[in-house]
Length: 300
Image (cartoon, rainbow, N blue to C red):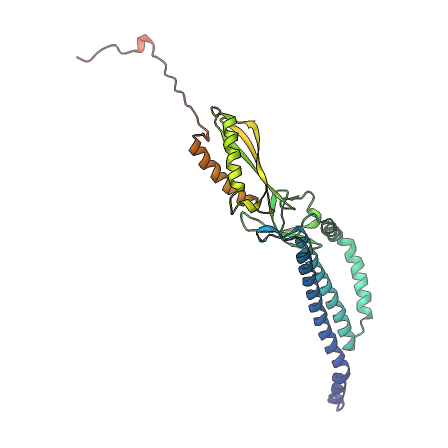
C-alpha cells in the first residue's frame, strides 16, 4: 500500500533537497563555463601582449597558452564534475562515506598497476613546463612526424602530413623529440650539378636566385635571413652536391623550399647549367670465332 505521506514528503524534498540539487547542477555548469571563459581570456591576453607573427602565424607564447588552457579546462572540468556528483549523491540521501573509502582502496590498488600512466603524466607535466613543444608545432619522434593537434598530461596526438593518419603517443614514450617549428625553421637544399660545371659560377647563380627569392613580395616576408650558399657539400657518383640554407618563419620552410627549387631549376636552364641524372653505359663484348668455325664460302 502506498504511503499517504509520500507526495507530501516528495514535495518537501523538492523544496529543500531538490532546490539544493538544482543549485549544485547550475553552479557546476556555471563554474565550468567560467573556467572556459577565463582560459580563453588568458589566451587572448597572451596573444595581444606578444608580438604579432607574420603571415598570420602562431607565436610560441600563443602555442604554450593554448596548450596550458586546454589542460586547465580538462582537469578543472573533471574536478568540478566529481565534486558535483558527490554532493548530488549526498543530497539524494545516499551515504557517500563508503564510496569515498572504496575509492581510496581502489585508487591505491590501481596505483600499483598504473605505473605507466603515472610516468605519462609526469612526462607530460615536464613537456609543458619546459615548453618542449606545444599545440601547432611540427615534431618528429622516431619514425613518426606530424603536427601536434592535442597535448595533455597523458598523451600527445600527432597528425601525419603525408597520410593524414592520427598518432596517439603516450608522453612517456617520447624519448627523443625534434621540434621542427620552434621559433624558426630552416630549408636545407642539396643541389646537384654535373662535374663539368664551373662551381664558382653555380654558386653565383644560386646566390642571385636566393636574393631574388628574398625580395619577392609573397615569399620575402616568410624568410628571416637571406639564403646562404655554403658551397660543395659532397661528391656523388654523377654529381657535385652544393648545400644551400634558408632561415624561415615556423612551418613555412616547405613552402619556401618548393618555390626555391622551382626558381633554381629555371635559373639553371637559363644559364645552361646541367642538373645530372644517373646514367648507365652498357658494353657488349663480341668475340671472333676460331678460323676453323668461320664460314668462308660465298654463295654462287
